[in-house]
Amino acid sequence: MSTELLSRDEIAKALTDLPDWIHTGASIARTIEAPSFLAGIELVRRVAVAAEAANHHPDIDIRWRRVTFTLSTHSAGGLTQLDMALAHEIDLLTSQS
Image (tube, rainbow, N blue to C red; front, side, top):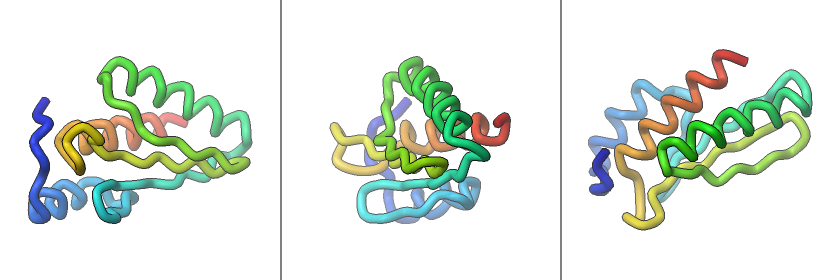
């Protein structure tokens, strides 16, 4: 998958399929409120497995039942297709909770 930076137009187009994600600067983020603390931790575990398989890792912030995933391709200095693909995977894993 490409690690070329996405243009503003490409980011905007990609986010039409990712309505729960917010674009800020060089990253996108989504906060999920889990039904319980343990459910949030389990979601983080499942995302960690997917991220490891993709060799692309989100920043993760856990605050009780609220889990925020932030994506950016640090080596490229912004957003790439890697981020959009992992955002889709996180959405899929969230819907399976």
